Image (cartoon, rainbow, N blue to C red):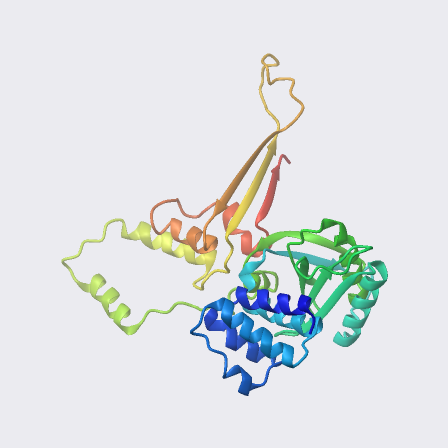
Length: 337
């Protein structure tokens, strides 16, 4: 095993939380269980990483195996990347073909390597008929840089592709072409939807956010206490009808399930200045006014859901805020009709 591979494995282990190291190494399935049991996790992480590297050296690990370890790390720790959603489109009148994952991988690799000589491509099958693709980019005269990578998640027989935010913009057209050719699609477009939480993005575009996310139910103790509050004549409920209306409207808008996790929503306003009089500094301005508003929260949709019941906002909320999961967008541009 050369030093480049050893250093890459060492850095990958350093990124993994200590409690997850052995779990991820087991999923990797490169080192035998007998060697995994010898790893001392009570020492500092640097020492743990060196210990793993020494075990890998004995088995002559290559960059092929190291890349798979890196994919497993990102599958386990998905919120380390910003994921952008793309949708591929068939040509008009074109029928859906029978899909073969191995053929897709072969075609994707062939197209990308033909367009870019120095590129390293790795695949790993995930759950729900998804394939994870890791692409390390090089240049015309330099080998692939294993620290400048793009990750692609594609679910077979769906038009949606999830791509980690790529810092090397110039290679995006080649990546798109490889995806379209391998999947037999005609066009690809970027959707106005991105997040750190890949599972939430999947739930939104596949319309599964009312199924895959846990539904909250009252426990018997909570039911008893809520009934006691209603029955007890000593308690006076102010504005009960209004509170019930807000609760009903909120549930109709958001449902009674936990919302997909989105950290932000951005609204860009572009409008012209309107005035009856032709006098004034702004009367002859042709360029529209631009304003950018961004809402952010660790769990934005749940935060929006709680606004009206908390008395912070009126119910119902603006459709611009509540339509995020249904329109599969969290980037909006508002223009004049």
